[in-house]
Length: 185
Image 1 (cartoon, rainbow, N blue to C red):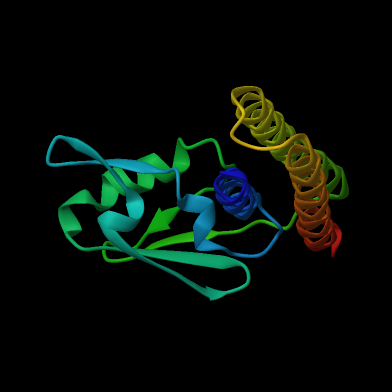
Image 2: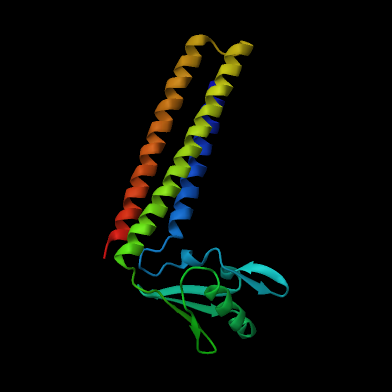
């Protein structure tokens, strides 16, 4: 029983870490990264489809992303979708490939993006704490029902807290690396 709670908590923490990495990948660092376009959706045969499902995305150099649609008829739709995605990018096409130049970040914008990354990190730490609270509540319930002893309950609390601390430190490390990437000129 106790091991099931710990296993469930670990799985929840792993999902939180993966979610943080996905969120941070979307933040510009001044370098071309195709993950920046993950949220861009394009109308394709009447359905809103992710850009990656209608085109090939590449980052041939640190300041450029190229988007090659699988069908030339949607090149204009893709260009409009990227331009209106709120990413501050200005795509242009040559009839075959869309080129998305990545402008250099200003010092002020770097600070703003660093704050945004830290907010994401704090949100995910809150998620860790909520998962910890749920696990602690499950252990209280198991002890109350007589499924685990009081000693096992205390041991579980210690494991839960240690696990939470280690994942919290992991978030700090991921965040520090991303902020360093953002502030690097």
